[in-house]
Image (cartoon, rainbow, N blue to C red):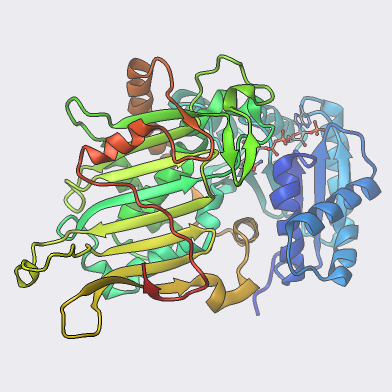
Length: 501
Ligand SMILES: NC(=O)c1ccc[n+]([C@@H]2O[C@H](COP(=O)([O-])OP(=O)(O)OC[C@H]3O[C@@H](n4cnc5c(N)ncnc54)[C@H](OP(=O)(O)O)[C@@H]3O)[C@@H](O)[C@H]2O)c1
């Protein structure tokens, strides 16, 4: 039986979208699954005036809306652990009263002065919050004191470095947990296990056998009332700098010395150091796009420029397709194609490894095409892994058919899978940084992105548009087709059935 450390979680931004959709359900699920000891409290902070009871109602509603398999009794015993504290992030008085509240809750819940601050706020507010925490002595306790920071970490390398310096004035690197919730997803963690616990996959995982890699993160949603944020971020900062580059690093890294966080980070950094947009004369290596009015899931949707808080002449991209290369012995010559965007036909995050197809003299007289093999990781939804290969159709005539073997995560593990935020909050409590990103990784990820942004600034004067509900602008198809390849279409799966495709 694992002992879960007592702690007070203090969440800045506790009336926001992230708190309601992800954090509140995660705290409750942790409590319900016994991942929190009874010695815990959650303090939510925001500007809106609210009594504790109103805050508990807000959390109850958020849990009921965004969680499955809720025990009503557990929910009732969870709510008294929640407290609301109203303050503006710039107000000294609010931090002084926060200190008093924390002292009171520590006595009440026996939390041994362990504190986890969660900054679910905009990055420009991190400095104001951390300096106030220091000023009011909240950065030092007799227990542990950790801080979780949301992405995006800065808007470019320079601002990220400044942000890091400001945070480092208050917290040491050991205390800072930079969250990238993609790393908390089961299938992302399974990527390392599939690679390193299975010799059949480990051996061909290199440029001798792999022809190309595709990574896709497609979202059906638009910007969901987050126009102010998205106008500053765009797809490159919102998706590529963090989630996508982490997926590239995990797919391409060499085996770490151990499963310790620092050894995994070392290998990921080696990949990021050698990662760059490929240098193809005359051919695009980056394609950006912006969705225009269209239909998603049979419902009409507005274009990006018509969204709330978006400039009607905005050139901010909501889609990117990239061709990246890794300049090391293992991956030299293997293109990594990236495709990510909003208002795509479906939600789908997947990685495909396409294996090289050697000419097969045995089958040269066969009129039909022999498909090359590929391995597919479905990160979300329909989590799973599928291996595609060829089989013989029964009969005297030689006919070959492509087939896939499928591992369906939910069929095997049903609802026992924790959501990414549950796993990550719990890891922070246990001081396990394996699934968090270090400053060095963040720094190198910005270094990868800077030249890509530079290319965009110099080549994309007007962002091409794409119809909402499609897979992006036609230029993205051209990017890959010029290499004689095509994008994988994310096919639907029906619960772990193996079969022809
Ligand atoms: N939403 C997501 O799915 C998601 C996913 C990944 C990362 N993130 C990141 O998480 C952060 C929060 O995102 P969000 O979508 O939750 O934002 P949001 O919905 O705009 O919520 C912002 C929260 O911060 C509070 N706040 C803002 N300014 C404040 C101030 N000066 N003083 C006190 N409270 C203040 C707001 O309180 P009031 O309501 O009282 O104004 C609200 O609770 C952002 O950095 C975002 O990039 C979000």
